[in-house]
Image (cartoon, rainbow, N blue to C red; front, side, top):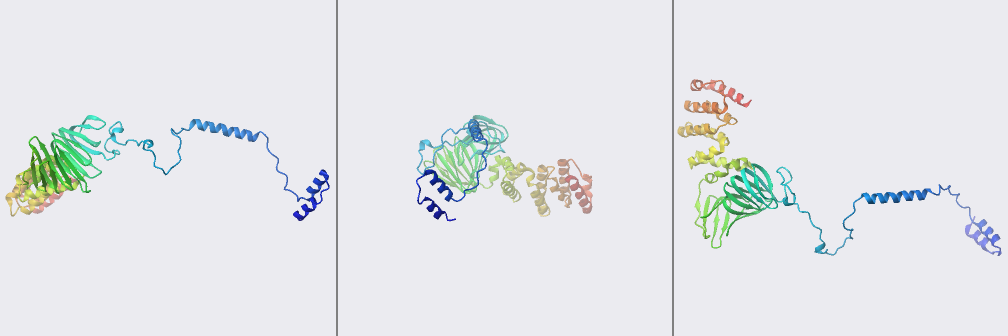
Length: 405
């Protein structure tokens, strides 16, 4: 069948009778598709439409609506008045202080309180801190009347310590010292720390030092790096092992040399021992011990070693072994110091000294270990006075094993 030819033939010519012409036209068309499947009930589409409308109304009730209508994105600069407000994440918006160990407030202060202290914290007001760790807001004012404060700024690795009897406001890169004594370490991240003492400004650039403010003026002690001091009428630079005094009128005196720094910073020995930075403690122990052994400042170094406690026990033991033959007086003095600072955990360091030939040294060490541990290793003073070296060696090994249990 040729559809075009048959349709042309059917339409030419038309007879003028509508019924006959329609019959002729339909006969010329090709056969159509099979009849459609029977339809479902007439009411089904309307029922489905009603169910859909009801579900939409229910979701509209349940789902929250936006407070403002959505706006189309635009490349034009938005009006500053229409800028959305950013929620304040500072500790002042949190209602309660965030304990240490949880997520700290951004750019905040990590505080360790030794004793008790008063603070005036932005957003919280006046409070009292008990011994422990805290997170405080920037620009908190610390008053230490019954203790000391250690502060760490994670953002720039800086540290501040406030001695008993001081008041200072501490920010992320500045300290305002009202009175008292503080330690400042700018850290190693190229950060600058500025200390304000009234009209006198001090800048710490990868430097550390101690600043004391008294009614008579200001003292600056350099512990590391260089500290720049500026007053309205004078300037000064303070290097390590130097101390500069600034009078009330702002004039700086010539720098003086300080040979033994630990004696000037003994007030923060406990904070050094509690610090997470073990390098600071190790450097201090080494500096104190060298001063003691070389007799540069032996009396001051001895006091500092007593403050440090058992941390210096192994160094003293080694020094006694090296000097007992050539410098017996020093070795016996060191043994007496060792006996004062030993504790149970460090007593084993002293046991090798019981193998020395000097009877007086052995008796000092035996009495010290027995007193600190409450044990005698199954021996007596007479044993350590008379026993041979081999018997003493056996006794030392047995005593060491007893202390390690």
